[in-house]
Image (cartoon, rainbow, N blue to C red; front, side):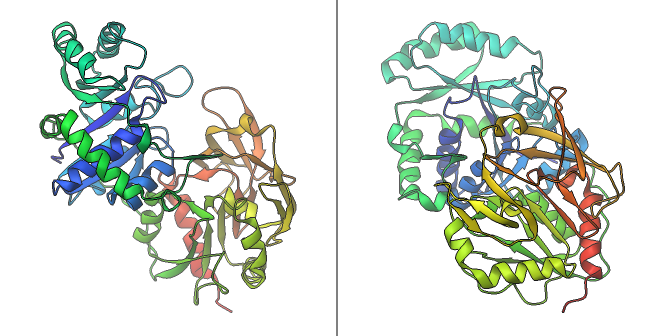
Length: 453
């Protein structure tokens, strides 16, 4: 496949990748380009910005979740009708799992043969930036860093450094970003706020795009993208249901964390996805045979979720009657007897999981990538079935379950987690279906066997 593309990386977290990526995407769209964007790693919120605010198709690409062949396939599948793909890196360029490059921005660029543009935060530096850039370029022979952008530097400082960097580091300097703090997005306890909650974000991004047009060589970025080599991929053979089933997807401001490729995979396997809001809708969608309750911010909207008594009762009755369900993190929290809100006030929830959700002081132990292994036969597969996932939560449960064994790839930390039965899989991990497509198909097969009452 020939796909113009580049990856925007940085020397460290907090360098301004997300803001710059959004600004560049907006500038490209304003030029009439059909653009797709990708986030390196497991983050949900940056792709939400790209999709809902900038208006690009956006997905995750993660070389921990998927092997090299599958990673290239996912890139190709999501770019069949686009002119240019922009990938946003994660952390520092070489920072991966533990002290390695696995699942790093460098790893994704290597696997997909993607040219890299390095963003360097120049605040508090001048000549030291040159040595930093030189080291980043040559730390790996196949780093493929084709361009550099300087962030938080003045026009005068940029003018003094540009020629020196190009001479010493043999790399194109594509511009600079002045102090644009007025365009920085707000924060919440799980990261960036949802796009809908940020006032006039579209106008701010268009203003940012105008600034970038004047201080960054957008044409130079496009030329780097155009020089990206062809890459090869293999389309996997996926199972498919004989008859389409309707699957309810909880989706609103409380439940908004979904890997879009997970949802596309369910569709490819024969599911019709029907979205509903546990906050606003009184009833489940008609004719559904399975449920997916994704992650999000149920603790922020706990009062509204609790007040929707009819919806809570319908979900509990559906699950108790055997409707298959996958519940991840926020969705899992919602299914408990009760849940603490942000003010630590306990509120009644669905009551399917017999326990209580509470704010936890020890959540950090379980943050990050994990591999799950089924401890017994259950809905997603037989004992020994594995699937990869990611955890990030500030809440705990009095009943986390023990149907899966979780193991971190970066250290020896292991624990038991999740509830797993013939019709239910629920816990704090966010599953990535393409790490084991058969597990997702087993869920749909159970749905096809469910008799609508």
